Each structure stands twice: as C-alpha cells, then as structure tokens.
Length: 381
Length: 188
Image (tube, rainbow over all chains, first blue to last red; front, side, top):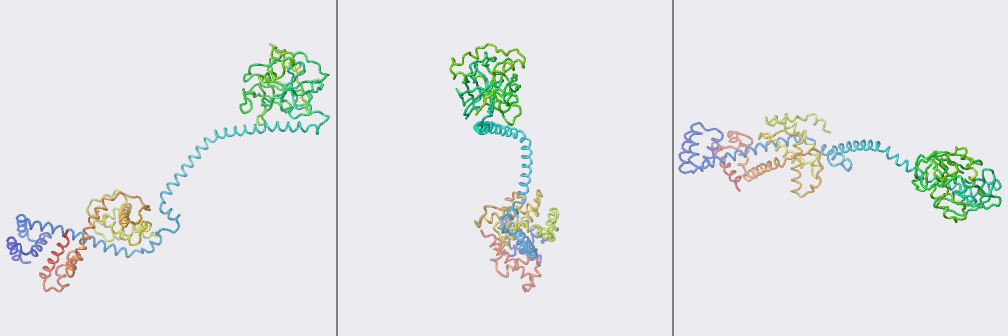
C-alpha cells in the first residue's frame, strides 16, 4: 500500500470519516504491526484525538482476538476429528457398553468400591472372629454351666423316675426277696420313721429293717410332695419301743464346710458316708436343700445327715449325676415342719427338746454304734 | 483391550509441554489415551458414541484453553481432570435434555470443575456466535474471511483463488466482508 495513499486517507478521515473500509484496513495493519513507525505515530495521535476511531480500534482488536480463538478451536476440532477417525470406536464401544449382565455392570461400576468393601469385610470378620474367640471361652462356661444345670435336672428326675418304676415293678421282679428302696430314720422312740417321699412313692406295702435284720411292717402316715418327705409308722406288734433318740434336730442352718456324715442302706448293710456341707443351696439354687460333698448311692435316699455333734442337719434326698461326690440334703427345719403334721402326742418324746444329743463328743465309731439302731432300711414292695 | 493405547499414554508433564508447543503428536497421544475412559462413562450413562465424542472433544478443548491461558495447575492426575470435566458436561447435557440423570455411574474419582466448564461455556458461546456469523455472511465472503483469518492464506493466494485482477481489489473485498461480519457478530 503506497504511503501517499494512507496519508491522504488520514487527512480525509479526520474531516469526513467517510471511508470506513479504508479505516478498517489501517486499523488492522496497525494492530498487526504492519504500519511504519511514522504511520503508527500518526495513527496513535488520531486515536487519542478521535474517540470514534479509538473505539473502532478496540472493537476490531476484540474481534480479531475472537477470530483467532475461533480459528484455534476450529483447528483443534479438525485435528481431533482426524484423530478420532483413526480410533476404532465401535470395537471400543462393544467392550465398554453396558454389559447385559447386571452383575458385570455392577462389578465394573464399583470395582474399586467393591475391593475396598471386600477388604473391609475381611478385616472386620477377622477382628470379630478374634474378639469372639477371646470372649467365647467365658460365654461357653456360662453355656456349659447352663447345660449342666439342664443335665442335672433331667438326670435328677430320671433317677427318681427310675426309682419309681423300679419300685412299682418290684412285686413282679423280687416278690419274696424284698428290696430296699432307701433309708429312713426314727424321729421318735415309738416307731415314727422319716424318709423321702420318692422312696416310698407308689409302694404297695412297706417294710423297714433295722441293723439287726428284723423287719417291721410300716405304713405311711404323712407325705409331703413339696419337700419330698414322708413319715412312716411302724405298725408291727413285734416292734418294741426304742430307747431315747441319740440325735437332735438342728433348728438353725449349717454353714458351708461343716463336717457331716450319713448312714444309709445303698446295699444290705449300713454304709457310712462322710463329707461336708458344700453349698447353702441345693439343686439349681433350691433353698430347701443343702449341697453336700458326700458320696452317696441309690438307697441312701432318706438317710439322716448328721454333724459331728450328732445334730440332725438334713435328709439325703438325691444327687446330681454329672457332679461326682455331691449330694443334696433337705434342710432339717423342713423335717420339723413335717413333724408338725403328726399329732404331737403320738410322737411321744420330743426330738428337739433334747438340748444335747447323746452322740456329742463321741468318736465316730461309737456314734455309728449308737446311731445304727435308729436308721432303717426301707423295703418297698 | 487397550493395551496398545495404554502403552502410549503420555505423562501429564509431556501433555502440558506438548500443548504449549502446539504439538500435534501430543494431541494425538492425549486423545487416544483417555477416549476409552470417557466412552465407557457416556455409554453407561444413557449416551452413545457420538455423545462421547462431543463431550470428550469439549473436555480436551477446555484443557487446551486452560493450559494455554497458563493457569493450569497440575493438582491432580490429568486423567481425573478430563474425567471430571466430561462428567460435568455430560450431566449438564442430560439435565438439559431432561434425560434421566439420577444415577450416574462413575468410574473414576471426580474433581470440582464447575468453574472451568462454565468458563468454557462462555467461550463456546462466542465460538457458536462466530460460526453463526460466518454462516450468515454468505459466499464468497465466508471463504475469503476463513482463508485469510483461519487458514492463514496470503492476500496474493486469495487474489489468485478468487480471480481478482489485483490484490487491492481483493483487499477491498475482504474488508467489505469483514465489516459485514463484524456487524453480524456484534449484533446483540
């Protein structure tokens, strides 16, 4: 573009502003730096003088910038389209599109989350397992003891059941032999004998046999199913009254650790069992009983439990099968309660009035010698 | 499936430097590196292959502009950035078309890129406006302008291409076209 032409334009524009086209051309050359230094100077003067020209310059600058951006973006898009055409989009889409299987879809979706969740689950399982493993032992003890309780319960009743059935079937089995069903002891000199109810339950006829081998017919005069006690009365002419009872009935309860012994008839001869009170309560916390560490056998039921001073502490009534060497004994105060049911006159000499038992201070052998005449084998037919 | 693609995944630094240097090779590598990821996202979220292409290219443009403007800080992986931008764009499209956008199935971590996307939308508006203006310009103005400003042809080339007797004539024609284009473009 000839310089004279531009100069002409400058002069004319200032006055007339008529040729927009040529102004645009100059502005563009100015913006692109194509003008000579003199022309630039002249034009900048024009810009400062004329606001319209300045405005045009600015707007053209903006426009050129926009055009540049547009060109850039268009170019980028073209490039990308070219690259895109190189891709095998269909093949990619085939592998990436939603899988028909929901599970695969879920898996793809939550791959990382599932991994995290899985490791968390494993971790928590491990910790739960270890926690449980630690606490399991304590728990098992509880469960075990509970089971034992159950076992005792069933076993205990089982024993009774067996006895019952055994007793009821006795007439058929050993009609003339006579069979001991348990033990009993005298609670009066005139022939009242106390034993367990389960010993005589369902009996047709009852006999007692003393240590000398003499048998006497008895009949039940009182039964107490609540405390499993029965009182028998010797109704035999051959029976002569006993001399005064060597033992007394203890009113208050015994302490744990008190030495006790019992005499019973688990077989044809009297058997001594010794032990100590091991618990204030009996079977499954039964407060009417003691638990006694004493070895007893079937047949000991109804036997007297005495302390070293010859006080009657209780009546042997049963034992837990699962626990070795333990037995239960009904507390003596329930013996007193049972005796109250019998007319006091008929009992004769009162057991409890004896301040001191005759057995007190004697050696065990002497005590047994005195005691054995008052302990009877109960024979049930 | 994309072992060949993965092997050519450029490092994030490589990409940024390449974009700043207008490297076509970098664009090529970048484009191929992450298209599958976006395709998977779109296909699993109610879109098709063309949607994926549009969204992905838009995201690349956003990345390009951001890098060129010099305010791109590599605070996360480029992959995550591209994914987040695509996700944002696609979510917007879904809601615009009132297509179901309730449960978006995600495959990558997501960054907050709302500002970037909005910034791009403004720019894109200008782009569309320019495109629109050029369409309205009509021939031969459109081609002259495009040849000169976009394809960077010289006035000499344009003069020959359109058969003008001299370049001054061609220039005059170009300025006439430019004036009209500006008029259309700056029209409110």
